[in-house]
Length: 187
Image 1 (cartoon, rainbow, N blue to C red):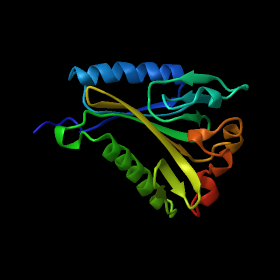
Image 2 (image 1 turned 60 degrees about the vertical axis):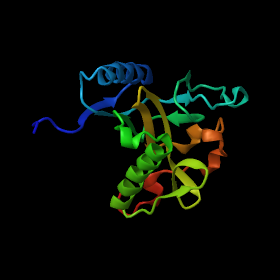
Image 3 (image 1 turned 60 degrees about the horizontal axis):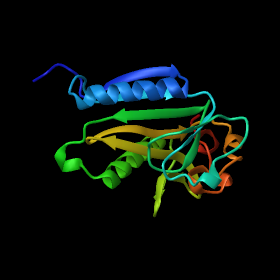
């Protein structure tokens, strides 16, 4: 049995989105080649909006926040200060090669994190992400190459929700977004 951990965790701190994307691509290629183990990148970004493959051109925001088109699924979302961003780069075993299941697994991770703060998170039928009541607290968008995952999730901890106001986050009304510190009894 190996002494190597099952998952390497890299804490990038505050990291420009372009740099985090470059690191993801590098680790992704290394994971595909079997050169590194499954890796979790954790960071926070300066303000940026990422537009996934599902973003209608008409929904691309115009304003002061930079917009980056990316290869993940989903629509546009905001990343910025006060958000915990996680990029799992995982080789999915043959018996777990179901992207819908993987998305539900990521939702479950966030729901369990919220429970640690005595906040009840949940899912919404037909909408990927995690909700607290009628408000969305976490956005999830992934990509997979040769059954290795990348991109991931953003949990609004104490995010400035006004940043969601200039576009339709995940195709939704921006007023649906919330953050953990508004709901938690322990923060």
